[in-house]
Image 1 (cartoon, rainbow, N blue to C red):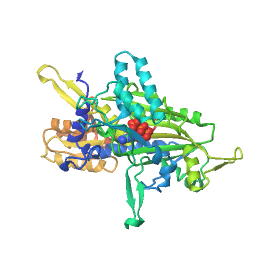
Image 2 (tube, helix red, strand yellow):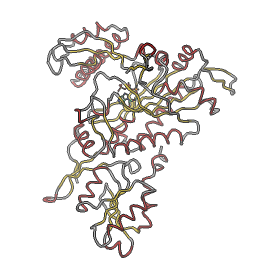
Image 3 (cartoon, protein in one colour):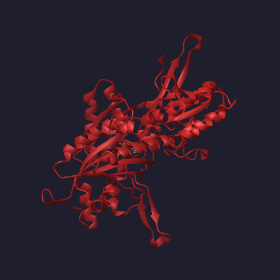
Image 4 (cartoon, rainbow, N blue to C red):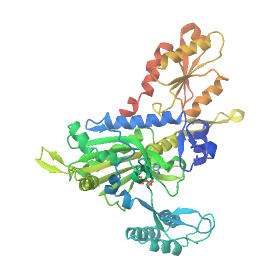
Length: 488
Ligand code: ATP
């Protein structure tokens, strides 16, 4: 067995589409840029990822509870959070190709070139200068820097650039049916604020004691300037966020705890240690006093899948100021009132899906000489696989089909099981390999005699003979979410 060439993003996109994981949105109309739909297998994998995250937060921790807040929120929320004034990306257009870029990404790309050419100091100098200019909101300076660095448009090959402008990433819409009464509201760009505005509701109704956390999974929307790399950067996506409220002064301890806990989670779902790394933020957001990303090695390089941020009391303090409602907590242990500090863990469900999918995608050459062929399968953790078991009669006749159907029926209430009698058995194994089904159960003539079947294991392709009565426990054990949760 040998490893085939490296997987490209194109391999991933094609496989995801062909086997019902991810489709371009409204494809019959040629799609909508940076918006995707999950298909029949994709939704199962994504739901499993969301379920394991949810359980890891709310089931493994006594002091974390979940909520489900609305996408629409009072517009002042986004004033308080800083998104109305500051959730901008600097954009620049090439006048010849009309192609739009993020100015900071053009400069980061140039810095990367310097680094690759063995000039890391020059790369750092450029990033420092960019940071200084952006910090001072000197957009003309950013444009001058792009020109001074000789950066050209990939399409036109020219440096004929427009001015740099700030572009707010929030989508807005109107509420109210009568034009005069309607007011502008936003589609939330992050789920976190739904947690902050409910902080006291949860704390009081649940009699929660600091430190405690609130977890949420939900849609977020960002009008990204440059959206590419498949589901890595979308305009509509899902976040899984947890805000952990702590006593001021203890935030660094909790930040380090969560930094480690979250890395452990990614390893537990099957992402290998060598494909994961921390990336500390050099330049901190205005609200943060520490921030780190967990990055995964995608086919296009190491990129962020999760952010862990120590957000101080920035959000609650601003909500207190704008809403005029106290956001304080009385800590009976130290007899003090304070606004808690917050440590946030924020992971994109879609990026986690993409990382899991890329990691699972396996292409190997099997067999020898003439019989050599390529085999593609998804090496998903059994608990995450869209289908856990497929029951396959060797042939349809002589009662084998009915026997297989009754086995499938008996397993369905325990885990997701499918029945398939269409085509040669080898083809049916391949079909299940391609969607990552960990166990195929074959029903043959011996089954009719002694009630035993073979279980074929996806990764090793090895087969073992077991009694039908053992299937539920044996497979049920392997595919249970507990297998992941117990190693977190
Ligand atoms: P990036 O720097 O890649 O734009 P970010 O730092 O703005 O990401 P956060 O605001 O920290 O991201 O959001 C937390 C998580 O939400 C990210 O780690 C990512 O997994 C996910 N996320 C953010 N933007 C998108 C997007 N456009 N598409 C898919 N997932 C996203």
